[in-house]
Image (cartoon, rainbow, N blue to C red):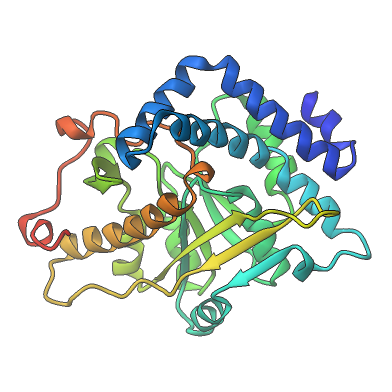
Length: 305
């Protein structure tokens, strides 16, 4: 109901409303905010005031992701919409070269910046993508995501559980896809450092690269400060595809090494723009005790910085 009301308002009012909602949520969810703040201090070594600012920013960023795709789609449908007035593309040459390679491309990102906007951006650029997503427990939220956030912008949605065969077929057809890889993998992943602490990582991207020859390209949609009379300003970053590991590595070590390189890329962006990452998710839970997954084999462990 609240989102429906916001969607009916002018863009600037709706965006300000969601920013306000995020700040209120940060105040109401005090325990979760304080936990996030502690993680920020431990990982980034900042003082309490800066850590509080970053944690509150995570609430605002999450709130904006709930409304940005719909507002953007509405704006894109207007006759006077000019994509380049609102989006700066950094690394366009990497994107064009990867898509022209004839290989499948896996865009690797996280819950960072305006992550829900990325499918609309790729559709606007003429390259709709597949996405992988876990069904939300609340059926009303899941229906809202399908209807308002993803419809008309993606080739399709692949379920996280049992979706690898579908991804493989898409890659063999040379179709691009995007994965958000910054959630805790639990027993399905591998423990590697993230922001200086052990964290359980999904190996999906590394596996797709090794088994199907997919190119792994880190991507980020950063919110920029808009112009005085504007509501939208984004910088879409396409980094160069991650170089393939040394051929003498075992298959398992190659997957782990590609996973590590994807993680290093995201970590660098989080350090540059910490208030745009979702600190509310416990990325490190139990990994330091070795309860989530097994660590890398010695040949890879020795190569870690």
